[in-house]
Length: 282
Image (cartoon, rainbow, N blue to C red; front, side, top):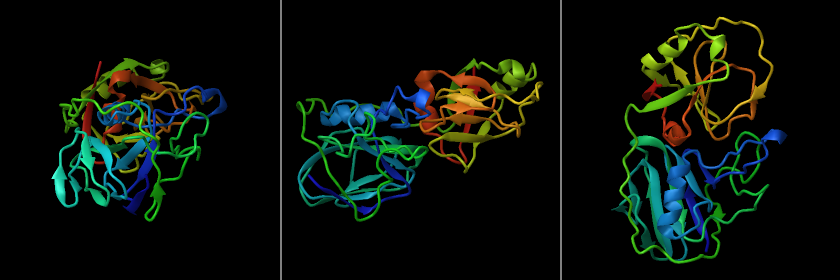
């Protein structure tokens, strides 16, 4: 079933749950930045949770469905219109062939997900269909005029096709555990990290969310040999301004990690948008 991309949006990529197990080769997991929203979208349309879907960043795409389909839109709060009529998010929607789906600019959160029954069918690279913008693995970002294919439906569409979901918060609180290099910072650096309202920089991307605020003081100035890092790590470069590592993060890094976001809250970190404020807590 072809889906024609009439407008690609700001950054639309194909994502599944990523290619885990290759960190020793320098290949990050990648995959959906907000895996909870991807899983939900797939469940709503009757796909396996890890099926490939579209991840849309801030400004969504316009898609022409040449055949009938079942779709769901999840993640960032966005106005989604089908043939000019607004549809409900977090809901399985049956559409006719010739229908056009338009996603506007997200009003809360950053990344929305469009799942189609059968999943987006692209080449599998190292066990995943995901677009990894850091290493270049997987398909390139979606472009206007492109035709996307879907796979065969598996199983049935759930009888209950709607899910109540809390929208992304305007100033989220993300909880931390001390990182492996917390001792490289002054005694009050962790307290400062947790008492500050940080602002997300416009220089953020799928590799990491860069934050602006007071400088986190280091007590060790020695160079750190590159070591393994995980998604949700908070690295602090020489500027003292923290960086939250996200889905496309490098597998190693030479900046000390002062803290790590608890894994359940990484999807919320992935929804942080430039200019937004957030707080950390123990």
